[in-house]
Image (cartoon, rainbow, N blue to C red; front, side, top):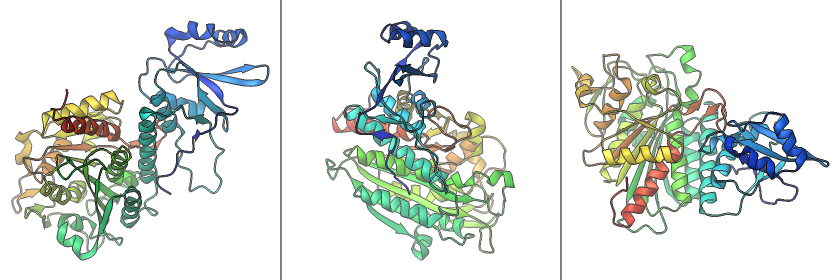
Length: 474
């Protein structure tokens, strides 16, 4: 069900019609290269090449081609307009002169994504695109597209079909087929190694699982950079005894989007065969209510020995991650990244489309910001403001999992996580939404992979510089 092939592409070009792409300033030049009737049609129908505008072209034999308006869009998403603007079942190829074929391939795939495998009656097949002649950029675009489809499928799957066990098995399948060594930890060993994560899962009938995987690139020596990824995989979040209202649970199947994003990122790293050693840790759990569930003001001891007072059972994501981060730091990684649908406060500050980035390393943060802008997968940095650390103080434990103050919720969550990251570890935390509230070009409504392509690009740059013995280029 997961990690499926990209069925929106075709290998053969027989019968494929050309699709042109144009910006407003290029309309006259495009019309000059078309047949007179087609050029007249574009003029008479008022085609202005605005972003995502699609016009179909005909000749005496019927449908002959199409034109996509790019507006001033420089990213891939505008190409997703073709998935809804072209006739179902039709076959297309990029016309000569498309300025960025790799962006076109990625954008088309992002727009062609559908989550319809659970329906009894499947919709008609959408349009298909002939893949351009392969090169490294096309291969990278296909890898990013397939990783995005994987993340979206995982996030969109209803919680009754994707619990902690199913998420862990999906990870075992994806990572194992790429050659990773995958261990799935549960039961008493999980309680011993990850006691705080275990406390989160105590209220659920479905037991928590932790995925720990290791992989090494074919060119990675024993001293190759160690990249460590941690992901929050809360398959459903009721809030625990600090119960969410019904409206607050409607999208809580997406609370495992951090783990899904880690899995997608790992897949991209393995596809590219980056010369790194890779560790992945996914906390797969549910936050439910029962007689065994954790209660407000419980004290839970972490694997580092810190006593955590549970100020709010609905602030469980940071509890899922803290033991994973502590274990990851013991391996002394070159870089440690975590992904989590952690706080509503990040959404209040930045909205649904802009993940919050926190980092203890200014160079790493700058590289992630630059990479996000470069590949049109933006993030925005918020501060690890030390002045708020005292807000996590607890009268009965070493720290509380929340603050009594209502402000700076995303910062407080990040500061909590930082308590479990060693000072010498280069670390970045992504507070993501993992969801598209409404459909847009290249972004159907539903689950979304956010910050994944940004992180991959930044890691690739850093690893390339490390291999060359250079500092990271700004």
